[in-house]
Amino acid sequence: MTINVASQTTDRMYLDKVSVAFNGRTAVRDITFPVVPNKITSMIGPSGSGKTTLLRAMNRMHDLTPSAKVTGHILLDGIDIHDRSVRLTELRGRVGMVFQRPNPFPAMSIYDNAVSGLRFIGVKDKQFLRDSAERALRSAALWDAVKDRLNNAAGTLSGGEQQRLCIARSLAVEPEVLLMDEPTASLDPIATKQIEDLTQSLKELVTIVIVTHNMQQASRISDNCAFLLMAEDKAGELIEFNETQNIFNSPKDDRTIDYIAGKFG
Image 1 (cartoon, rainbow, N blue to C red):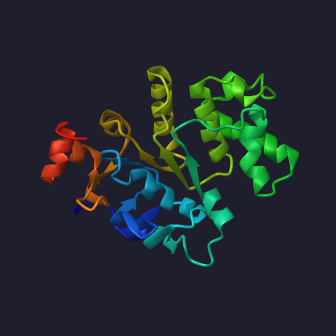
Image 2 (image 1 turned 90 degrees about the vertical axis):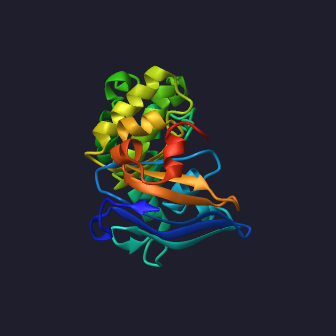
């Protein structure tokens, strides 16, 4: 395994020998790599290599699964996210999540979707909510398209607009990290390009970690890249981590070379 980017003292997040198991069966094993501030980190690898499992561990989504066990350390600004001092609601505000399929509340208005996260954590000030909604929708490159129909149901938006609304919903609470699980998998090429362009502008505001099966997408938009592969016992392992240009142009591991060349996956 090759790791060469930044020291953990300067990372937004740092994964240190992270493993995830379900019912005693290991899904990912001993994953270590940094998440550098205001950069896009991609995770690539074949289906079943544990990318989404690892991503969900980064904001403790596995807490909802009784059979799941996460070991190792996931540091956010130097603090382990499993430390007793870290409240789950606070963590979810600091580490947002965007899923593979757009999941706005379809019957709820566009505006109410945008501020739903803020309301969940107890924000009631109407002016603050309005300002936050506009700021988040602008950040998600959606404001101009929806500013005159904020009271319309979110279900009236196109697929790409719904995904940008989900991104706005996460941005409204001003997270430090945004986790994105194949956010363009269900979108057409035009909407995909819009989301890719959006991620490039968003990294000035938030650190992004994205899971993608699309190697060209990882090459286009990410700064750093982690390549995961399923071991013989079906546990996902980190094969190589490096700056994206190095992963694609001069990988260190023969398995990375073969995957980039399309020999498997």
